[in-house]
Image 1 (cartoon, rainbow, N blue to C red):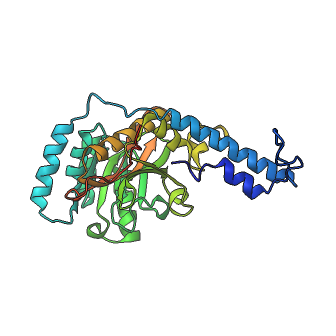
Image 2: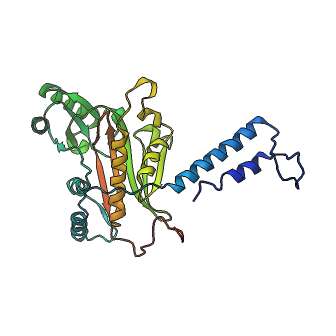
Image 3: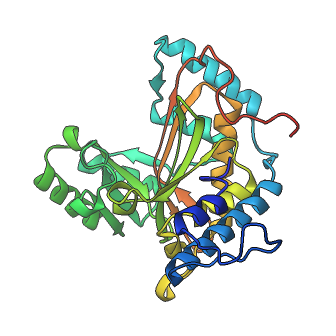
Length: 315
């Protein structure tokens, strides 16, 4: 369906062109009372032409050799049977990470740190440098509040950071700290998929933090997402220049990001029981990306099986 379409026709009406030629003339040249209205009409015509090109070349849904669709289906059935709640449930982190891994989506390991000694042991197992994070809901993904300490290179730094966190925010039982290995620096992004009652499965993308939460700078596409749609999704947010070398910064690995979007789309499209996926943050570096946090929600499939994008007759 065109965005507001056809886009070109409303633009001409709203611009209120005046036609100096008679209505019976063979060739009619629109004239506008102001240059701004002419530019607006031309802009809408360009958008419409672009939409037509994309509609003619929708792209393809990529196949990945490492996807274990049947294994994921069996695991989803087990998890739903174990939970038994007809409303569904959010998976435990280990179960969510295992399910995502069957679709080639690997979440960076994070080990619980209920006390300073456990944090040190976790850091030794992972290898320095590490990050110390709180996973309490009110502090999760809030580096601006001081709930995340990065680039801890040794035991002394780690113990000091642990003490600072507990002094500022409360005891370990409340903060639920974890230790995670450091990853290459990049741009923090968010990838989500949900089931919309009206539209069906929807894939969303935006930058992490204020850009998405405060300004609503998030883009959406219907599942299944093609390679062309994944490409346009990454570029359609207003803050997209941050991914492509804005003000001299290094461009990040957008092909890896587009692949991740398509893998999440495949997971949701293949399994209607997956009613919610949230990957946050996804740090996209110059080469590759790292998924640092993930949650998955399962629910029995809906009674209707006609949710999602519709195919028009003849296509």
